[in-house]
Length: 306
Length: 275
Image (cartoon, rainbow over all chains, first blue to last red; front, top):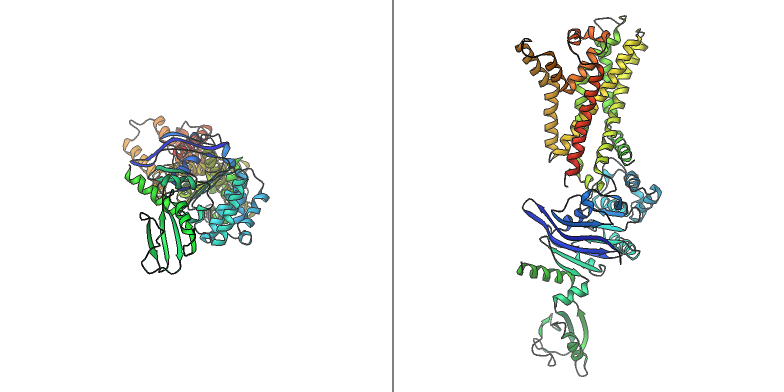
């Protein structure tokens, strides 16, 4: 696999604030990576470093073969960026704005204008950007990031302000791009949305990378219990099924549902026991730890081991 | 190429925002009123009608063109940073000096258009009302328009330098107003005061020349009021014209340096800035 972005041991200080500390990772072609963390965890700083908008205090950044800190920008023709609060010159129309950015990337204006329809701005394209709502500006921001089929796409909080329907379209577009070989790095607070889509998750806390890997791998590392929910017929209130091992952490939910926290190695054994002949299990749900829980776990872990 | 794309967008925006219209109307209105009211004492039959206009119009230019230029330019970098548009623009394949150069070409085009049209209308009106105008007067008038544009370039560049250095738009506006007051009003008054007190005892003519070169508005004034013999007799600057050793070429080069040095410094400051 070809690496498109390399971050090696990068530190960035703003005065006494360390925005990023000794971060290292590489992004490969076709990866869809979620960058998550609190406000101020260093997500935006990392993206700005990749764009050469700021220079690392120490360390090395390489994007599409360029060193952005040295002012090299040839690779930026194949790079799309959507800033967190995107803004445009309000006097120009949506169409004029997109045409301007297409020219800067040496792409055909006609091709770029098709993107306006793709993000649902076709009807508003001849109105001034100043009259656009927050959601419409976000769509225009998305359209400009997609100009010229980028090989690297950096999206800072891309889905804020998008309605659910457009969110769906948005994820379809970036998943298609990723499958065609684009590296997509997106930061977001909407962890549930990312869960099914991101092939890899990087968790940042106070400028330090605290976890990096596929969601399955992070689950393995975190060893968080899987929740097993059982609906059992004819169980007395507050009683627990007799086949449950004594050490299993479990509780009753709304009367007739039993929830068990199963450690990874217990999970299969418990399921066998639950479905064995003679039990009165009517229904069964297995809920693996969500990205929310993983995120909270890694943050707690990072706080304990500074 | 990139610079031209950016210049084109700046011009487009200036047309949309009515900047072009407003500055052209302002300059044309003032030029026309000076042409007809200002020539009242000499009468419209005076052969030197255009020379009188040059004197009054260039004095007006010294106040107005720097002000318009600073208004356009003080916001160019820090304003775009605050609005967030610079962040997106710099993620595109453009170098920062290209952004600055593009804005400069765009803003100067707007200013040049307004000046040429606004002042040109005044000259055309004089011709249309039947004044006879000599070729030397026309040459002096053309030189005045050209040097006015150059004075605009100087202050656009100075505005960029301020814009590249300060943290927020308010500061940029304040600093630019201060610079305008200093260069347009205070500097000359102070210089006059010093010369009056000194009575020519210790300050040599060369020192006066040097002090005049240190202020672009004085360079402009010298160029227009002493550069042409037919004009300087009206401007009351014939005395100064004889004592100064600065030729028209030197004055033009001075204005050019006053453009290029701040522009270069602005580019250097901008390229080192983090956002």
